[in-house]
Image 1 (cartoon, rainbow, N blue to C red):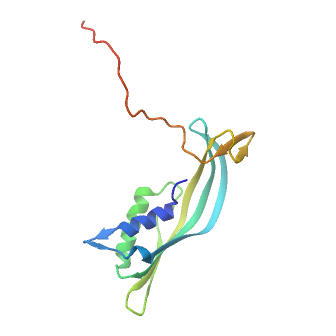
Image 2: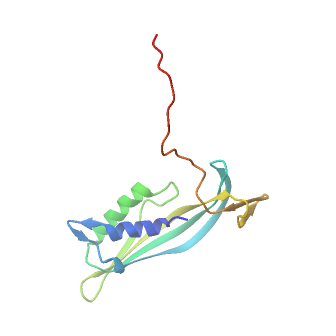
Image 3: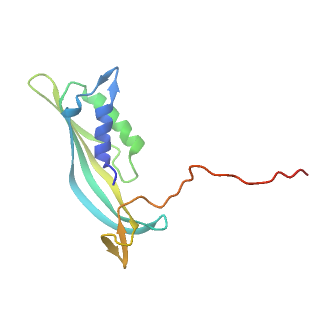
Length: 157
């Protein structure tokens, strides 16, 4: 299974650099999921796959302490959402910035809705069963050739 979108956005912010400076130290970032909701789908995909459900949730990222301006953090987060958000994800985010005693801020970003699709593949002994077919987490059956040999003849007319 891959990382959640909120974890990917957090990693994007952790690695973001503006004018040679990081937004904060790696250890000052935290993220979590709130208010999750599962919507069953049961839709066949890629021949032997199953879109089992969509997981909707609110995602929160906290940076404490943070000396970077909230507008800078919001710009990085906003562009990430525009580039990586799916059709079920919120495009806007809420933020708060509370001043700490040392004049740094505790910044909190919240995305109202993110959506993760839960995809499974048919397997003989998978732990999930639907209509007599067993499924498990795994890579979809998409085969991409790493190399090939093209055989052919050139005919002159």
